[in-house]
Amino acid sequence: MLALRIKAWGRALGFQQVGIADTHLGSAERRYATWLRQGRHGTMDYMARHGTKRSRPAELVPGTLRVISARMDYWPEAGEPARAVLEDPATAFISRYALGRDYHKVLRRRLGRLAERIRGEIGDFGYRAFVDSAPVLEKPLAEKAGLGWIGKHTNLIDAKAGSWFFLGELYCDLPLPPDPPAANHCGTCRACLDLCPTQAIVAPYELDARRCISYLTIEHRGPIPMALRPLIGNRIYGCDDCQLVCPWNRFARPSAEPDFRPRQGLDRAPLTELFSWSEPEFLKRTEGSALRRIGHCAWLRNLAVALGNGPFSLAAVAALRTRLDHPTALVREHVVWALRRQTRNKCSR
Image 1 (tube, rainbow, N blue to C red):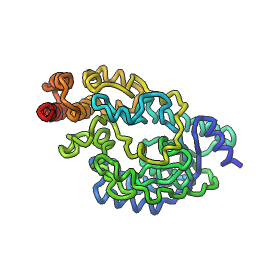
Image 2 (cartoon, helix red, strand yellow):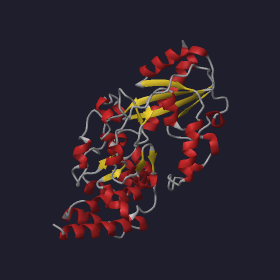
Image 3 (cartoon, rainbow, N blue to C red):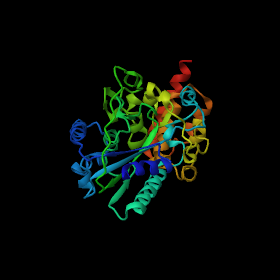
Image 4 (cartoon, rainbow, N blue to C red):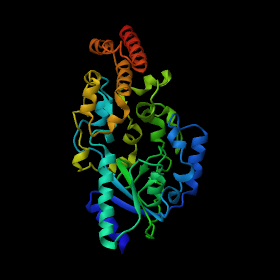
């Protein structure tokens, strides 16, 4: 049976799980439309583009009958423990998914090889690979494909593997038998809602991106709202709190994928060291990394906020002063704010 062989080939290529979904996403489409109407996508204008192509795969890729959804675990086997970094205000916390090689490149290459393997078995067929790179409702599709359920924090959870994984899709014109969708096992748990630093999970299964630290430090390009800056702590790229507290992640296994191992010592780097990087150094050190996409100015903005949130430190103050005359107003504004915070923290010692 072709579907079983596709799953076996996917596992051989490094995916931990492969499932097959049909293209009917009516309920997900309605939830997504409501989310957009509420403005919870913030400044991510691209989320509102493309109309129903995001929720109707055959409109995005004509002829699509099924979606092959694949999961690849990324929790790094090596590296400084996440909780230890969060508890050290002088160290930069970077979301665990971004410590290694850019996942887009890793998964897209593997999906391409999976498609080649299918072609070698059955001949030419229509397909297109996606890895968080087009209007695709990847989590509802993965849920339909049996890869897990969408938890109250809006991430996908697998009962045997937790939520530390990436997703990729092959839209194809093959009439493969779809897998049964996964059942929801969140129950009465509220751990993610109660722990979220900015209360971005406004209700079970409802995320307001405008309050989410991942959005604020990665997707948002303007000034971070004043009221939210102190809540960000030392998180300079993304936030893993809702996953760290999720009880299902006790079943997560470290990834053996070499590409996802921490690079450049970013699992334990001091804030002052990262803040000292010039733009050429930033570009060099983040080559092949998802970190590069935010650019040097947002990098400095995020680091300034983190430095301002830490206890008074002469090193932090000295570092911040080096950027007071930065040519970008966005950076200067956050540096001034951080210096004021440092002064306040000194007085409250």
